Length: 528
Image (cartoon, rainbow, N blue to C red; front, side, top):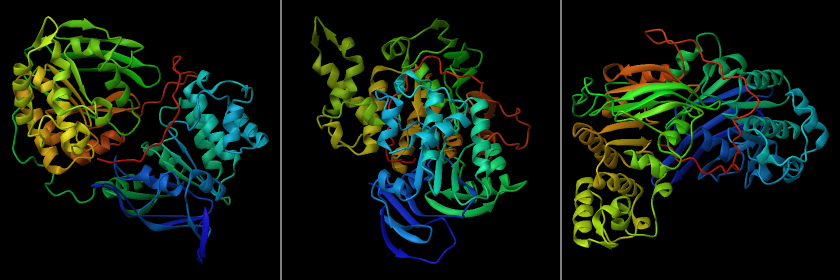
């Protein structure tokens, strides 16, 4: 972290006019953050507002396009996490930044962490007996999160940044983390705290900076009743902007059996007794803030992860999946937010679309090229993919790549489509095309389960929505009532109109069901 000029300010951290774009996607327009010594400062915003991007810029993981950063009045240029760490800025993420194939002692050496203060903080969290020669991958995920936090505290940073660090922690550890954070108030060091749980914000934070669409839109003193003001800032002015351009009538017929029924689905500490039905002709929305269990739900339904308990019933038949191919055979097809996850980037549009149904258009090992071409061309035309089918997928825009991931299932026939934030990071015109397509699929009898981080999409596309908080369904909202304010209140588990269930405490467990966490890699945030 290089020093530049000295400013006169009583702030421990001051970021001004921070901007960052990824191609056509604007992550931050003009974000500012001012943190006083000895305060716990909340950084708030809906999904995609730019919170994580700002933290990564402040801690050197991402280079900004513009703006300035000052630590204790001295202007700084941050080139790497190591420079930020030496300059007093340290972050802890929801996914621990720990290398799984190294033992804990080796991980500490990577950040030049001293053993004595590290062990002190481990003891504070109840891990005094931890064997530092243990391989990281053999430890429970909750323990790795605490190790990551203890390492950050041992460095004694000027500003400790916690980005959803408490998400999915057991209740006992969450409570202890909040006690430690609260104990730092009034001292010389500060905390920047990101959490989607308003109860946590209210219990430990002094002030909150609110981001919306990459800009700082307000700073609020956290007091009784400030939750409504924070939510209002996150939403902005709502003036009929959610009303769909074209009304759609629900095509579902609830006299028919559900296309997919999920009953009591649980997965370790991530999901708790999740149940819902999706009917033929219906688009069911899933609304959840970051880290509330939606990732695990879609991974289970798409065959990428196995549940701890519960049942999935597809067209009246109970199914279980060991592999994504099993889910596809059962009629559940998956559209991911990350196009690179689903596509063969070096292959052509035609090959990518034809891949899932290639066995059905061949005989004796020979592919019927005429039939393949006709089917692919129909899908390309229907989705208005702006490229010749012979082009490599990597040469397409992000929006057209996403349309290819959908086209491959449309070409093969769709019974139930699982869409995980399919419009993230694509242009408005392509979003509208995907909205129309999802409605057309539903009206043709398919069932669609749609998670979206853009709350306005619920009324544009869905017939109803379920809201997940803390790994459990806490609300079901019909489309007519699913405006942004109602959804955001439900997602934050706040009262809005009809009373919502009491806040769900995370199950207090010490392990994570035997899962072995992968190494954390914090990529640039590309918001929807």
